Image (cartoon, rainbow, N blue to C red):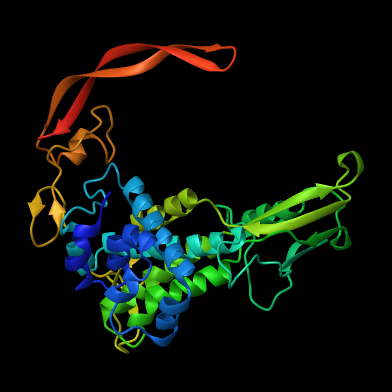
Length: 378
């Protein structure tokens, strides 16, 4: 999708997240465009613009990752993460849970892309993470670095979660600390997180209004969705598969897993109000509600219904959207069409069938067609 028409309208409102979404395709062709579009660059960022062209391209790839994942996660919802016309600009102007997700997934995408580039050797200023962070003990996995770094976090918490995390490293019985080593090309997540923070957060560090506090919190929540869920992988060495020695390293989860996790946080997003100190926020509503955690997505404004086009909210409505007539969920015709009903028409679907392999080396298929029902919102 060509996002260039959005550049002018987005840059005036959201000079970081919106700008990256708008010009990510162009940055891949001309990395300097982001530097020309972003005004009053901080020293570190300005230095990157002058010297680190490869990093700019990875930042753009990260923004594209976030945009595509957002569209996948919301493909069946009333707001489907569209980048059409002025819609995304208006969404980012508000402080709803939708803008919170956009900020979180973009920050996560930038951290993910930069980290991946380090591991593959695409960036010259960073490399693999080869520092020892874990060792096996009789009690399971223990931390050896000053800074806590989690083993692959499972859904389970407490004792059950601890047991699952121990099993991630203890793959064979009787393994001791002297029988394995930290090696291989681990993903350098700290470098990716640092670059994401420099580009996503730097323009807002000196501001303390509620919108800025919420945005910075959600940016960090996106990065933590990558950093806190690193996975430990090990490879066995030894005669006959005896696994007398194991080499272990860390890797990032897939970006689809990151998207699912942030979507779960979107569904459980917490509304907040500014606190009296002017530097933080509190959960809105019942005072007994615990404050948001670092991984939670937060917002301060209620979302519009997104049922009908609205020039002030960026809603494009759901008229003409394809819906699932057999579903009672968010993608079903009842909810997606906002009670307006739906239209049904028959379409012809053409596909390959009766495929056969012929030596060597061709596959021949017949062409088949069938009628399918297409349901769209009125």
